[in-house]
Image 1 (cartoon, rainbow, N blue to C red):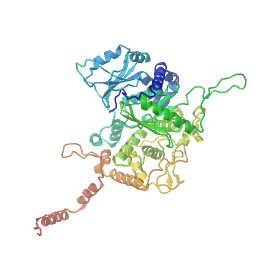
Image 2 (image 1 turned 180 degrees about the vertical axis):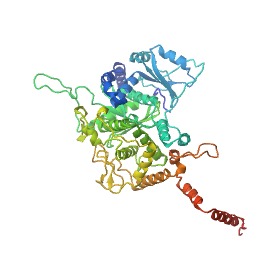
Image 3 (image 1 turned 90 degrees about the horizontal axis):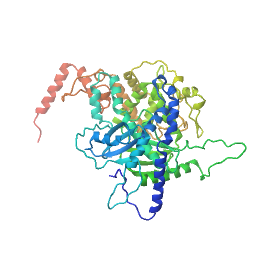
Image 4 (image 1 turned 180 degrees about the horizontal axis):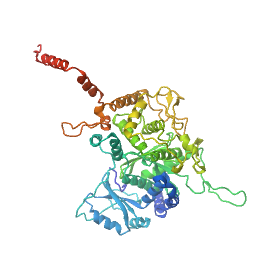
Length: 569
């Protein structure tokens, strides 16, 4: 297990240049901590009136708030016997502690947010470089710290915040106690969705990574995208982060038509892809050599979207770091917007994803399985096809966009409205139970062999290519986001939709049905859908009920007679 202090062995050769690089990193860390988000926080406050319309907040405002919290926070490795009151008293010497919580990941950790950024600087000034024998240290100072030599006497009643979901059998028991399928769907979402603490931890990890990258790009931003912020992430999901260089000043400065002006001298490369690969290679080396708690760094630079993959042990997150993946950011914003328009969107997405994972339709291992993103788009498409539609099409959102929403990325039109107040939804009163049943009905009979799923138009279209499942990428419209799915996996999905639809039409699975021999509630409704196939058993019970009593008795006597016959030697 890697130490959270990043105790590393150093080769003496080349050590001078390494130390010089570390000094540069440390200088930027102390000079720039918090400055990159100050402007964002100010802009977010100015937009707050717009963001809060109809009780919804823009993704921009949410991210700005979380980034501000992260810059005022530190991550501290503690002993399990740490006395909580003495711990807080010790920290409060540097300023007011606004929020804190404990969790477990390769040890016990505390996330501590101060009211002011100056408190973080004061705390870092007091922290010391550890003394070790037989090893050399990488003297990189970060906001990942260890608590040492603290009197641990007294009560140690810390409450640990969960960072992963409960096992499926515990979830099934919880759902079986609910009074309706609607409540089951809501309960599942509450159990699986990211908590506030987990979200804070994700932004703090990004902030720690940004401290490393800022040595080379002082005005860069590292922020999460995808499931971590789009509203559909579950506890334990990977942390997808992006190195955003678009905010570097001077990028959009206009050269005056006359007079003197200045511009930076910069290295040139053959393509933007080559620049991205070069940047990620250097950042990857820094994360690997200098990043406390970052282990297993892989440079996957020849992928369609170059990335770094590594584990951040103090948080327990598996991280994927990309650079300037602007289309992915727009996809994140779009999914967030859909999730905010109607709460049923998130409830149904969480339920379908959980159902799919329980039956092996999706997998954490790359392969021919349907991905979570594809499933999410399928749910959105289904909700667009309701009568009346629950959510609008992407083309409709594009038509509502204002001048500030205009977005063209590498020739792809990624424009859609960001102001919630401009979106008028139609009145659809279907319950979660109705929608869940209709979802399975819809895809049980969908013409996958001929039709493509398209949330931009909100209607089926003829397939432009031969593939078992075709789901058009919302922004890069020439791409099929489900191109990896083979006929076998699509067939399993359809068969399970048919089975689940059948189960939700059976009276004995759509209402509570008592308790088991172990005095626990018998799985019903959504809980029954998350179990292995129940169809054969239920059909068998139905058959026994339909048989006349005399036939059942005759069958039983025949069975007993056969059992009593002596066996032939």
